[in-house]
Length: 292
Length: 343
Image (cartoon, rainbow over all chains, first blue to last red):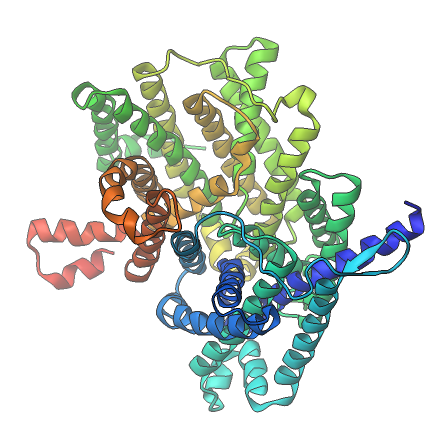
């Protein structure tokens, strides 16, 4: 393959994979920004989203892209339950308690998925299975990846409008700056927390449904993805939505090129090497604010 | 570091004497509850006590690590490789393994001095992921892909258990001394507010590095012992699971305490080891309910562990050790008001 088309392939496929990461990372960043909560079980919400979409498309025979909507709804509901009954009870205590809760949730979600769906890898059958656009003679990109990119972009625009243009978005931004002050200004912060968690979870659910169409998945897929999402938001800067998008693109492209040139277990390592280099040079990430 | 006065005060300290008696009693347990299974569990608890305590010490200085398996692994690999290749006695190898881990700890600590809590946690996690790739790339030296058995320090079984127990007691005691010294106080000050700590003249960067080096040294020692219990070293030692275990143990037992990591490692190791015999019994009852899985017990065990973690954290946010004053008060039958002060 000539270098030019290889470069195109790397960027195209890297960006397509990055889309899923970005959705996950943006949701995680939203939750962290507003609630200062570290949700290590975020990848499990993605896994759940993938299974919900799988179950809906398999059982009801609906279009896999409708499954995305189903996943968003169900996972948002699960998110609300988790926020209400687990995280809210430990918020404000030792930060590590939140991590332990998320570890507990990882076990609970993945074992529930094993019990319900088994641990064999599954894949959501999309209506455009095995169809691809030719870009150059040797580079192809599947319909699913293109549609996934469009959906990711649409969701990001929607999220941006939600955060910047609506009343609840204003409340979310205020709470993220100072929850005490916004409470004093009459913002119902516990409602804002619940809403932010639900939105973050819904994005993870959408990411899961898209992930399931592009890759095969099993109940243990969440852990590695959570870590990637964390790496991305730290790379981009905690609490910065723009940072999560840029960080996700860098991460996706770095990972994909490492898998082509080095292979094996290197993709994860290379992505983290980039993360460490960025952090050593700029300790708050690319778009991070000082004093976080 | 210790003056003569401190030392004599230490000897007169009831807690120290009591712990010594407990350690001696622990050494004799296997004589009564025989069997290699019990011995193995006790040995693992001792090893994980070192590991969880080392993590706890780092947390005590306000730094979180999500990649402590890196130092566990470096300690394990370095101690075994040094003992095999240089022909030094395995015990010396263990010490060198700890120093090796501390060296890496210093390097990573230096790279991260400017980073705040979550960023540091992520970098340590990343480092443990990179280690898997790096150790496989250097396979000629490390033999990490296929793995190899380390030279046993003592005949396995009872003598190894006693050795581990002695080393674990020494490590926990050193950590106790550190946490109660001026150094430990500095760590605590940094954890609670690093800006104020800097204001009262604590060199924050220096102390953070010191905490990192000490913690990684003990993690390396734990690694050297851990590979002995597994009789095998390969790159699976860097697994995420091993990074999260000390965190789980310290938090479940009780953060920033000496007893917490001990209780936590006993509980988690016990859950890991005993539950399989329980689910042999549950398997035939529950299997028909879940047709999707071939073996129903492993996911159920995970579900149980997950619920256990969540319940402990929600109802005992200070860890299992916070039960102790309540239990003690129950046996002394003192009025309830007093127990709250005791905490």
